[in-house]
Image (cartoon, rainbow, N blue to C red):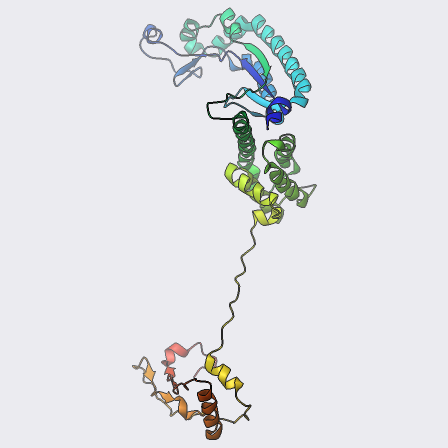
Length: 393
């Protein structure tokens, strides 16, 4: 794994800061205003807006653009929000994008510096009721511009090897952590997608809603060497995307499948588990919708007596007359009437000659013929309980 850190990956650190435009009022400021702050849109709980937010909006846009591009091509590293592990092969293009963003940032900062005082006065005019507190907390132009900084660094990872630990173990721990970070970032994007109104309310989505999934696939393809199971996650998403409509709205059963995919990918551990299953050969659809298990039917062994009877010589079938059961009258008050038991001997299964021959055969085999069982008497129920009977008696 040493080649992963030495050759495949490079760390890029980005530090972009801006002037927030907010300050906190001290007790002295509040006392100078008579002990209370005026009601104003510029005053929120715990902070006071002393500069319009639109004044630094362009700088914030540049910052978000840089981080979005790095997020798409790499993963956050070393537990930092500003450090990204990217492919070394992509580094030339990334450095060019960073340089272009830095130049754009400098131009916007210069424009802010030139118009700073004018923007401040416009903010005061828009909030006349809070003019006194805003002017007392004004941040001077030089101080505000000094807070707007843009810097970047590129470096390699050199793991610290502790006593009793090999260098390979240190490298493996770092790479494993980056692989986990990759899954967490994919899950974070899918969680945002799942909260989209199209999933929560409309129960149908357009083709644009698939962009985060396709972007996740491209990102995982670049960094699949961080964890072998990533290949399974790629297959999981691509196979489901292929099964969805390629144009128009995704709705009905297709929407249910897509929603299940996004739900699975929105949880890091669930996505890891699903990716491992696909990696081991389970179809993507079966991972999302596991088939119902089929219970095996166990064979029922025949009683030994029946085997013995079958081993005996064949006998001719004897017609058996039904046993006459005397009629039973059920009164309305009577709930259940039990008939007297009918012994099984009253229903002959064989004639006497054949019955003796069977007993002799069983005796020769060392089997004691069982005593004739007593059949349970039928139970008659009241008329009210038999209303659903087809005969309606």
